[in-house]
Image (cartoon, rainbow, N blue to C red; front, side, top):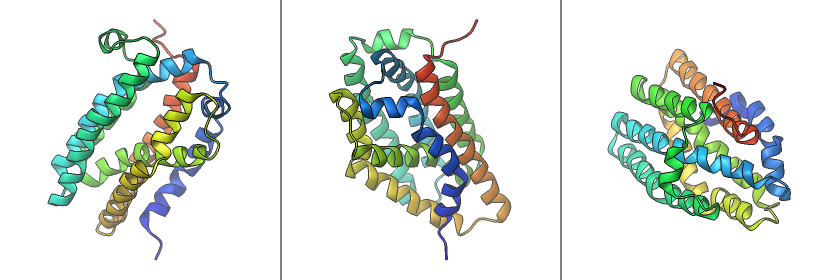
Length: 221
């Protein structure tokens, strides 16, 4: 029997292929990515990660069993602690303090992505919330794996790649995918459809997030 994760990946694979081909990621691996583009990406993440942590906490609230509550509560805390520390170091690499980063208004895509995640996780079922957050876990893991062998001649970019391609992050994602398969076994066709719809939307936001950094997106008015 095919695992539900395979069906979900089929829904996202075309988007993922476009992500891998995006000049942001090709520039990351060959070292040609302009530093001001990566700086914009880091500033976007500084606005997005708190919303992502809140979305994970909302999943913990809706989780159907203690193990799942613990998983998403721990991942929410890890996002605040570990990824926050990573991005503080990245901000410092550009000479930007946290207070200065917060003074930059959240760009449209970062704000839209975070808002969509919070809406899906607070207003939807646990399965719908899971559909919304899985692409962020899984696409970063697949991108990290794909780029790890190539790495980057730029030490800053290589460090970012190693963070998401590394074994610890891959194990975290594997646990979430196991849970996804378990949850999907008890869903109706309509419920699976809503989960997949959320996943497709956030996968698109993943592409948009890198593209927004590439364009150094700002508010047009």
